[in-house]
Structure formats: C-alpha cells, structure tokens
Amino acid sequence: QVQLVESGGGSVQSGGSQRLSCTASGYTSSIHCMAWFRQAPGKEREEVAVIGSDGNTRYTDSLKGRFTISLDNAKNTLYLQMNSLKPEDTAMYYCAAGSGNWYFCVYNYWGQGTQVTVSS
Image 1 (tube, rainbow, N blue to C red):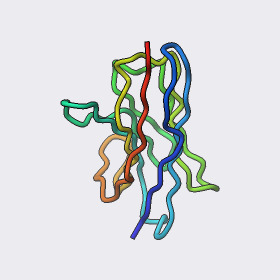
Image 2 (tube, helix red, strand yellow):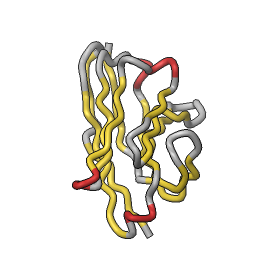
Image 3 (cartoon, helix red, strand yellow):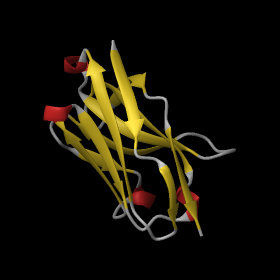
Image 4 (spheres, rainbow, N blue to C red):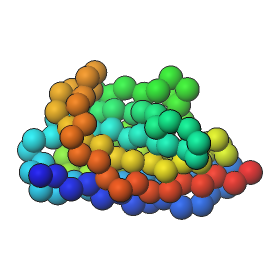
C-alpha cells in the first residue's frame, strides 16, 4: 500500500504563486508515475500534470507555462509549482500515484486533497 499526503494549499491573491507538495510513504517502489489533478465546485476532476519516474512530464495544454510538476525521489515527494494564479485555478488539488509512465499512468493511490483558493 501507498499513502499520499498533500500540503501547501491555502488562499492566495490573483497573480500570486503557490507550491503544493505530496509525500508518499509505504510501498513507494511500486510507484512509476505520479500526477496532480484538480476539481473545482460543480466541475469534473481534471488532470493537471503527470510525471514519470524517468522525469518525463505531461501537462494539460491550458496550464503549460504556469504550472510545473517535479519529483524529488530522495524525499518521495511530488511538487506542483503554480505561478500567475487566476481565480479559475480555485479547486481541490489531488495527488495521485500509480503504475505505467508519464504517457499512460494507471492511478492506484490518491491523496485526500488540498484546497487552493485564488481571490481576485
């Protein structure tokens, strides 16, 4: 089993930056890819960014250039650096992990989520 714990959420003003963290514990050697998802009120959950254990990444087109996903293997921690935040980025952000690669990842584990609220 793998446990994922997110942190770093909170309130930020439009145009600001925030960094989310997700620390994995347990059977972490079973993880080959990790990702950030988000879900805004009344909307479906959407994939934000994916990273494979080889460091390759994939981003939702609309977020490219503002968000950066990274992975510190030594700390078993996934990050999401979010810049130039907009009110429409307000959502619950979830960390996910699974098997596969950056191109196709099957998510077996999910964190509890961390709320990000961007005010105008």
